[in-house]
Image (cartoon, rainbow, N blue to C red; front, top):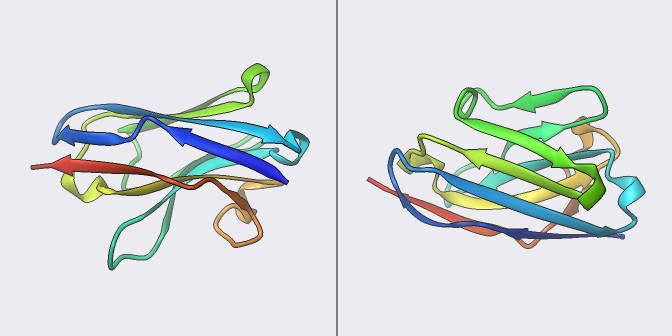
Length: 120
């Protein structure tokens, strides 16, 4: 099992910035891919950013505004979010798995989530 603990969510005005962090523990060898997935009320969940062994992924909705990075020594992944919009409001979940394609599934490891609220 991999344990994932998110931090860094909160309330921010439109145009502002936030940085989310996710610390992994346990079977961290099973975290070849890590990413951030969000779920807003009434909307489908969306994988917004992910890092694999030699690749990265960004959803079109966040490309150019969000940056994902990873500190392997600390088993921590970050999501730097700039120019936030009200439509970015959601619960953001850290996810981990063997490959990026596995992250948006129930077989991936999930954190408990952190709320990001962007006011207009």
